[in-house]
Length: 361
Image 1 (spheres, helix red, strand yellow):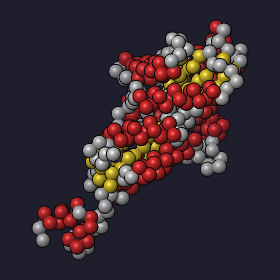
Image 2 (spheres, rainbow, N blue to C red; image 1 turned 90 degrees about the vertical axis):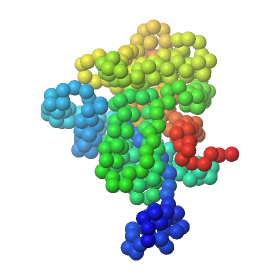
Image 3 (cartoon, rainbow, N blue to C red; image 1 turned 180 degrees about the horizontal axis):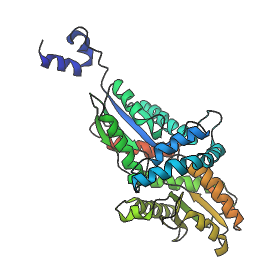
């Protein structure tokens, strides 16, 4: 039997059993896969679960770009002994008790399952799964599982609309680290960020309109809150800041609001160095002093609600706003697995899978 005949059999699944030599391992039918990759989450809210998660996250050289020796000392001697208790309290505020998991894990799984069901109804054969850059389920675990299930082609979709080396790049870095350990690697595509995608912008605008329509008051300003980065990352060439401003501007244009009603701010900073400005904490405290008492906040940089949106913004920033003299504050949830949210992800997936799957009529 020739090598050519065996290889032909490997690509014609229905003939594999009759062509492959006796004892040859089973080769599953070839599939196309999509792996959604989100940031990460601890497995629980106890000290050691939070500590494991923070250690993996804060040990990433893409995230912390300082002297590695100095940072290792600071991380292990100070941060990992103090921060888990603080972070644990924040996670407990938003933990999903019904399923004993973080909101990020819940929403990411729902997005994966929702897309899988949606593509099946469309008659598109795809294997859709999800993983976390930090924590569980790991990227390596899911890539191995998909490869074993017959996924010879896999699209990696990092769930970050705005690109940063600290998010999109490190997610794909981790995936390629995992691929380096595989004997039979699948063919890989990586999806780009989509800060100006029309479907994404329209879905954000619709979520704003829908949410505001349920209020008995009118926001004077919509704050678009993005996760912060050290300013030196911008000067080093990271496009994240520009992507955030682009998304915010396009959202305002889609809403048709006058200039100044949609504004950008950055949250989640820590440490002493300068981060991207304006700082969200300062903004919400200053608005009431400037006569703006009714505020809506949306976090377009997150596709799933998580501790940063639910505890830091919806609870923490709300309290700061009221303490500063504000009258009305509302947080507009992330797109999550709502129809609009799944439509955004479907659009990115179908665009990046051209040539790998049959086009719809």
